Image (tube, rainbow, N blue to C red; front, side, top):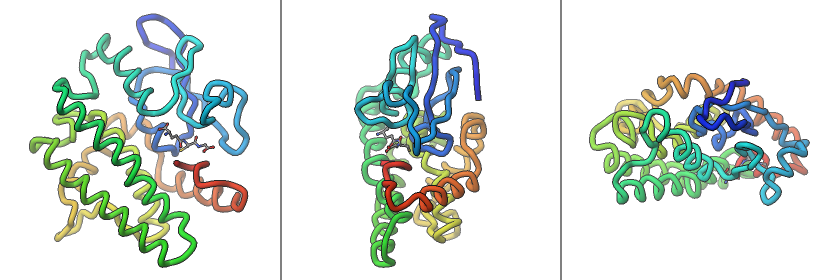
Length: 241
Ligand SMILES: N[C@@H](CCC(=O)N[C@@H](CS)C(=O)NCC(=O)O)C(=O)O
């Protein structure tokens, strides 16, 4: 995936990423040169660009690295959204903006570690505990959807916004959980506890952005198997943290 930068400053733009990483999938499409990283053998470029965490994603704009997915999303939004479509991924209203950031932080700090825990649980008891934590967190996000979306298709309204990207980038791994562990995080059956998110997820995966950047579940399953084979010695953080 190599694209020419289309920023109006002509500066060169690179994204250091990992195809299956939710933190990378959430990067809204601006044109950049995408450089896939091997997290088992980290490149000098990754280590020098993100010396603090040595993690992807890193956006390198005109030679200057921006680290942390949330910081990158906001940077891209500030530098390009205003100058291209004019539409920010964050709501215009300060309260709604704070709310979107709050739930996005919740999705990353509570939901994500819970479902990562399902994959790495050492015992069935531990797995059950992590499933419960995951379902409790997704239940909260179901309520948040009701509050944020105003009856529209996405958290941000009629189109995908910041919180849609943060949660939507985790859907790939919900597919892995269903396939490998039989765990259903967002249930779309009759009697579902997450009917709003089920409908949201269906629409999210149909967006051009999702179709372009989200790999198929089998790619993520293969990556998880590679990580599992690499253990012991590897840490959960090599996938996610
Ligand atoms: N808080 C970071 C998390 C990024 C992250 O955990 N990336 C993982 C890939 S999914 C990584 O690079 N891990 C390498 C490691 O832990 O050594 C963000 O939002 O960018």
